[in-house]
Length: 453
Image (cartoon, rainbow, N blue to C red; front, side):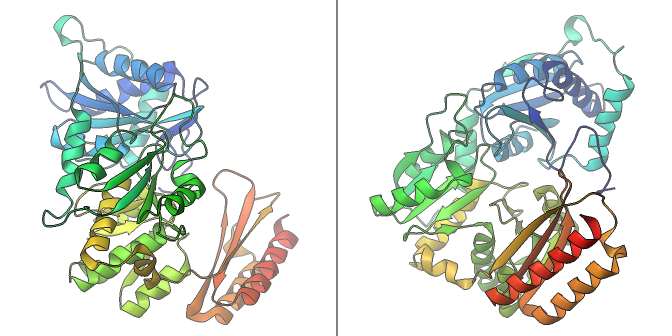
């Protein structure tokens, strides 16, 4: 079940401080053996692709993972630094049995993580992750030791970046060009530091590159999608048409418009949804987002006649719902945007190309395109609690939520939930009147404090 607490896997793979459990060489070697065992469905030779971002610890964990996989008689294809969606693409296109990304995404450099993709390029389902954990905890495969020619081999794929580059450019309409556009791109000193600037340049843009000098320690440091402030300053200084910031593993993107203002994932979803709707290409006339997306997105879509399906936090749950319901567009406020008609996972560079195509095609600046959605005021209060009782079973809190929802109507919303990692209750209220939002969020927060703090 989605709410089940798992020892190793979180909502996006395994993550932690490098060289401290679970991100140790020993555990990662075991993970390699387990994923290799899971994919060996028949006697043929199997292969798993491994990619990584630019963290110093990537070398250590890549060696351990390779050793574990090869020790189970499965071959390894090493591609080096490449965005997470690039690994998903290569796993599909090279017909590998699985893909592995060594990355902690937007976390600081001292952290690292492991994400798995199946042979179709989608992240592993919960049940497969639970099976991998079971194999590790029960020590069921320690006796499996292929020898001689049955041991796996490791190969390096030298043209992986080029393959992904070609794929990205193939998603951009052939009749269009980025000629005449000045683009500032911030690659967060991460996995997209080579392919990002290349793609925009080869499509005709005048490219100014930031965050393209990784040293193993500066990934996400004051740059990229998490820190777009400097990008905004550079866009204004350069007189650029647009700024594009991806994160350390390249699966999310944040834009800066020509005026220097941040354009987040919710606004990108609105822009793309409106365009697809106008083209008659929005499947089921709805998109998927998480409970954290701004209510302004919901209102804008509703006024356009487009539906919004909300799911729990995590791009894997967005993709699950998209596949279940046949939707082609979904994502998160953080900049994970999933275009299932072209990719199996969030892809910052692919999303950037789709938005740039709309800028070129429409002749409108990004500041005008983003106006399809108006962000509603939001207040978030975190309350430290002594216990985790079911919110639904506390009338004082549920009554406050119900009263707030009645007052907000369809122009606002209330979200009260426990943090997944801390002893906190998060109370969020959104609405079109800031004073009302402020009053309601404080009322509900007071109720939470009285009952749980």
